[in-house]
Image (cartoon, rainbow, N blue to C red):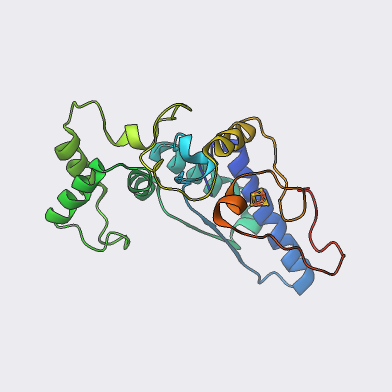
Length: 226
Ligand code: SF4
């Protein structure tokens, strides 16, 4: 993923170092240089019912810029870089995904306008037209209206904003999600509740779920992130 909240260029460039390490380890284990790995990376899209539902999505320019820098960092080491493939989407499709992801009922009219304008099979890059989506958004929202695509995507929400999906119950407590979002901003890493006491996120009590831990008594996974 690229474009997570609080992410910096340096965070993404660490991926280049990791890919180089993978090639080094692969060559050492194989005893020859003919090994390859692929960095497969996409722009992060904040989703409803998650702690990032309030987050600002990174702009296409930020995503494209970081991915360009990552490609350059991978290639900076010629010997290792030529063994690393890179698969990614540029930032524009992520903007449309972000619009659909956190849109309200007004976005329905944008989808219809895209369809009326000839949009089909947009999940296939050869059919995707970012310009068609933006033109449809302008048509529905008005070029100088109070809302636009950025309002739905790259805008951070306040804690007291009523979200379009608030009336849908996923079991998670909204206050818990907000606290988790604040923890994320504070770089506090939450443990996995399968192996620690319950954090009372609301899912088990609201959905009648019983978390069961295996009966072996042995520790199967790390109890805390390393
Ligand atoms: S045990 Fe259930 S209610 Fe507790 S934090 Fe985990 S998922 Fe949420």
